[in-house]
Image 1: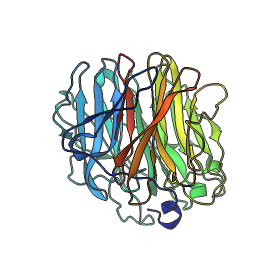
Image 2 (image 1 turned 90 degrees about the vertical axis):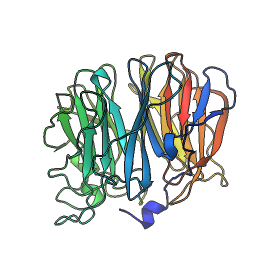
Image 3 (image 1 turned 135 degrees about the horizontal axis):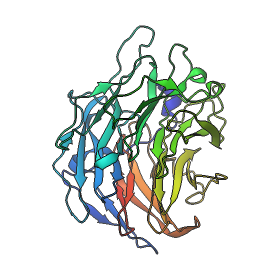
Image 4 (image 1 turned 45 degrees about the vertical axis):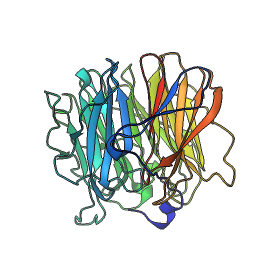
Length: 390
């Protein structure tokens, strides 16, 4: 794990009651926006809505250095989430410290949920700080999770970035960045493992990012498959240790080949511990990321424009970090993020609604009480209304 340079730029949270609590959000034109506390006093919620309208959610509980992941779901039209299922089969085998290292979720064919997460650091020859990359999936009965597996074979030297994505044809993609045999961020690469059988088996990992780009060691990343089957991976590069450009990898052939392009350039001789998000709605896909204390989003395809939610934060506002994005059936976009957070320090969650042209709708909303190591998640329902979970 990184310390001094990383701690300069991190974001965190203060959390929730034992039962989800719905709070009123400021009124805005367009979609309704509802606030929801993470169930069971969890942190780092991750949400996916499947084709049937069921909301799937995972969250972290316990010691951030060695805790557990729980899973709940809520059927369309229901007001309550299910009883939680523990995702990790080995107790206290998940990590959330630093916010960017928390678990991630995907939902694939027939509503099957997949989870990926870092385990506590293990000492292996040549890689004293390497953390295992654990994966599991809902079993065939949807009543529990299969025993967790470590996906790492050769791409050791993990730190801050991993993700999972799935489509409706049984393809599942697990990604993370690692140093492998050559230490240094400038040599770090994004690795991919593919499954063609709903996550039952995976290929061995192989590098998919350009060698010369490197990867920011303690920055998060995100993978996503849209309705056309395009696989997208958003990660922060670290070329020559100073070019911390947000970089998009896209594949139209199920991860066989990738194209890379810069989304947002940034020269910085430090690790900002950033994260990213994807969504799809009304036939469009969007990416969200952060840079120098601000959060941005843009539709994918064509030229990527940095659409800012508001003016740059003032000196009193602290950093904006950890964007979460959702789009509804009308093409409206909700962007949420953290404010006033830092290493081992909570803060608040904020959000802004945008119309189909990227113009802000209404005023920016905020809510205090974001926990240490926390971040928000957002989703849209079938009616086009949004929920911010934190």
